[in-house]
Image 1 (cartoon, rainbow, N blue to C red):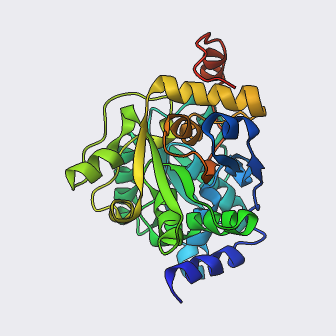
Image 2 (image 1 turned 180 degrees about the horizontal axis):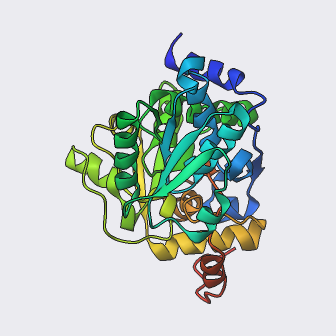
Length: 322
């Protein structure tokens, strides 16, 4: 099997463990952009984000003896939620490392009787490094959020659904943090006419900067409301190689543009998303070469801090015209 066929097989194997999420036509975004725009609602996926795809893909690749070991993960929230959910379903015990900067909303949602939670580091890279070291010292198995081909291919199953629901599309917009979803979509669509556009905050532009520098750069010290896309990329990440080779481009977004996109989704579609999910909407609003194309915006997750949501809704700045 080629990579595309492997991903299609994974999609079949995951049936019953994941939802087939809706694809919603957006009249307002189509009118604004001149494109035919659809929203892929991964925020309605099990655990509230696309991460469950990669999680079950990875766990189903393990042998029973491997599942009996200590499983170790790290995350800024959505990978963690998928890890905890899977622990309850598959009955394994694990340790989860979260950066100390995780939002209160995400931390509050992460409760488990089978997973021990540890806060470590100021960003996702530091938490990931600690998880790697812990797994090594305790003969555990690391369930990495993006630097694992089984995780990447699991996230890529989202591409199978888009294709089944809509047929051929011109462009798929996806957020980028560590690059698991973006890399997966690149692998799935690489031999087709579909372009994959990465969407990243200006304040957490590590993948963009790494590709331009031809090497993985250090995590940014800047803060962004799109926290699920922040934290950088670990050394030797395979997602960097895949994204640098196959992404059509990366669009960087300001904090104002991200906030505007969150508000648009609420006002026009009654969809509450985390800011990272809204990166794709912000990128579309900024794209000047999308008219006439059929495009899909992946909305990756829904967990947003209530105080941040209130602040965004109270902003008087009207940054789009419906």
